[in-house]
Image 1 (cartoon, rainbow, N blue to C red):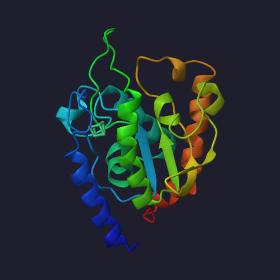
Image 2: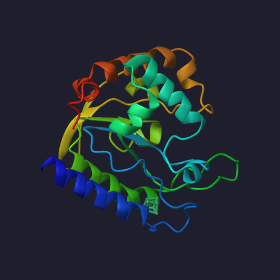
Image 3: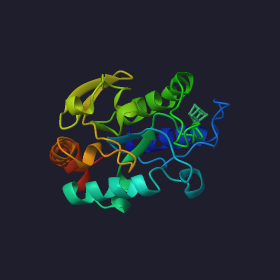
Image 4: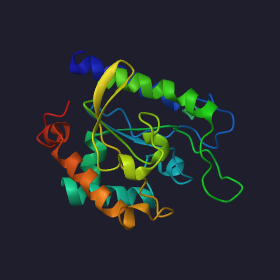
Length: 210
Ligand code: SF4
């Protein structure tokens, strides 16, 4: 697909995504990072309560941690990351709170509904690298019973008829200490170094990213 056709296809996709109202239990409209044509995709879990108002993914505290990781290990700041990487998520709407007060984990039917959007994005972008963030996002691609077994590793993965590198990261939320203590801290650093060395990231930094 020519670059302009790809941009046009992604523009139309994002416009349709923003109008999606398929899941009646969701508490917000979809949050999108915009139609960024890129060979690298970041996949989050679902927006929190602030993102719908701020109108971008990873807009609050977890995002600050995530962007700090990328700046430190990959030399890419938040503005560049948002301008050069396509942000997707397992679900694009805020699921609301669970009875315990934490953000509700999307239900299987909601994940199924939203997976069609992700598949279409993978078909349009044909990514070389996908970075799923947190257990739920990782589990959309590979088995993820324990983070220790997948963080720090690179996988070849397939979805929507495309094959790509997959380098999972833990969720940067302050609710989990996994990435702050051993072995999570070391595995996280290993994963971020792998991302920094990935050819798709190197090309993206040199302006050859799409
Ligand atoms: S979660 Fe996904 S499928 Fe469900 S309404 Fe939001 S955008 Fe649509």
